[in-house]
Image (cartoon, rainbow, N blue to C red; front, side, top):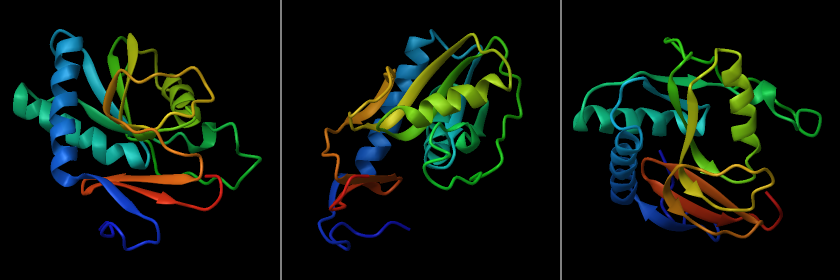
Length: 181
């Protein structure tokens, strides 16, 4: 369960649970519209922060139209910073459907430098060749180091490098870390 805003020093809640719910519903509608329906569309959440969001978007799509495949991918061993910090697999990837020829909506909670998304693209390639890959994120905080841009965004939220952004179903909290993240 998430801590209430202000429970941590310098923490401030910028989105509440209702805001997250509205953003998820909006992104679900955008996925349907951009793909001209749901034929050949699947959702894949990036472990760990993107999995709950992928499931939420999948559930919203099911309420609007019909169910589509939802899976998850662990990209931790595909990161380019393995030598810089300890990295351990966070979870087992779960793609119980083929991705060849499918439009995959890759989902993460926060888009920051783009390195996690790059790693997830590499991990996804080990499972097949999707027709297209689209990116959905709840928060785009800027500070990109790679040329990656989301197709679906819950909230653009410019932040300082010293801030940490935490996203879950209860909302979005920004906390000053006092150093770089």
